[in-house]
Amino acid sequence: MKTLLFSTAIYNRNRISFLYGLTPFTIEPYYITRNRRGKKVLYGRINGANEIRSFEYEKISNIKILGMQKFSPVIPILPLCN
Image 1 (tube, helix red, strand yellow):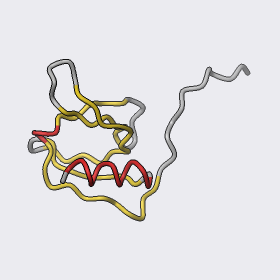
Image 2 (tube, one colour; image 1 turned 90 degrees about the horizontal axis):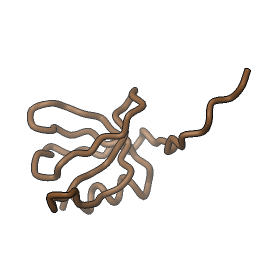
Image 3 (tube, helix red, strand yellow; image 1 turned 180 degrees about the horizontal axis):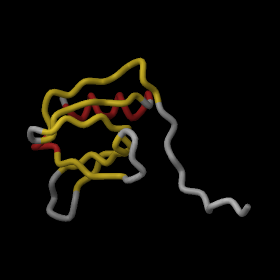
């Protein structure tokens, strides 16, 4: 069920909110994979931050797709010269 929700949000470029442990997060989801330990993880950019972070599936709960909040993926580009 989580994979379906995350895949839908990634495909439609919707932000999602969830609890990770007991901490609430709103992120822009980018992709789903497995980490080095074989655990399924979701990678996404935290709303308002410039870092991409991984979230383990087993710690994620209370998932909500924020349908009206779409995003464009951030693609790192070399800094512009002044």
